[in-house]
Length: 424
Image (cartoon, rainbow, N blue to C red; front, side, top):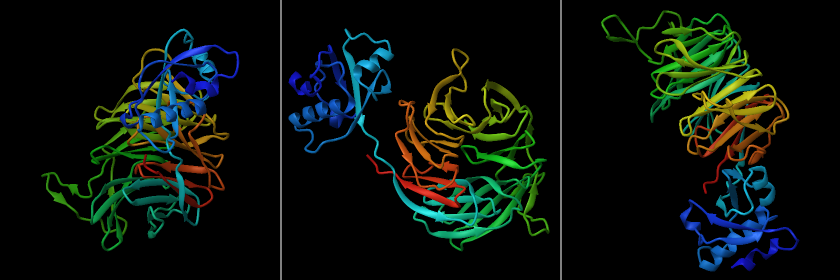
């Protein structure tokens, strides 16, 4: 068996004992130790695992694997990697292997009339917001369904509230100081402005809907967080529902349920982390965790740069942030010990504008930046992204991965680019 590693045994460097392990049962190989050359690199390990699998009859064609050593992907020689991790060459090294994540494939390009500054995906539908004050609804196959006027300034954020077979509702947040709740009759392909959320004193930058779609939160240049009901109907004092519209053609004005103060500069990102908890980031270099029910700050993390976006993953209970210094940072928002920043991801060459977690894999996220690229990252590989997703001809302003089957990014080249995910 050991001779299978002979491709890596052509210098005088020492031998090292490794043991292959995997959580993907279909690719399991015997877990006895193997002696390999200490300078072995990932493609040689890949050859070795494939030979073992073919010998056991598990596969006929080669499979491409990534290798985890000490919980991080191996991107150098094994000796360099374990030296960096302060692991002894005398130990038996567990080498975990997983099938390599396939490269996302470029699909459609959705052409708009102006910068695309907001994008949200729900099932097959893509909602976009633009600098020309319009909203658009598309299918992920690139069919344009609807253009929606109504705002009087650029739209900076959008989010789906609900979606079923016949109807949907969504919210848009604009620099015109309002958020609008919309009702979409899918069968008739018509949209009504149901409520105009008024209360901010400056333009809105961020919006997020909570997990049961009952509340939405907005962040603004006025440094305030405001909480609003998402209900398409208001209740009167007796609790009875009434859908009376004001006489204006532009929906009924809705006032915030709660206003929360604490940031000193524009709130650039906002996300619900559970039914009543909100996490925000701002240009004041801080991340704040709020109790939306009590209206107070539960926790605060201080950074050293302005934050432009934030996202929370319920799968790993961590947040990622986009910053002006080109770096993406991963935080445990509830951490009180050790360094606040758990990992730093560096590859973008301009400031990072947007970040979004995968909804099905706790390790994966995407980012979009002013260097015209979207990147796909794995938290176990902070030194480089898994893939650079090129295509935009100007800065990327927003990205979304709410549907696990495809990613979408909007940019200053007036397009939304769609990348299809090939399932493993």
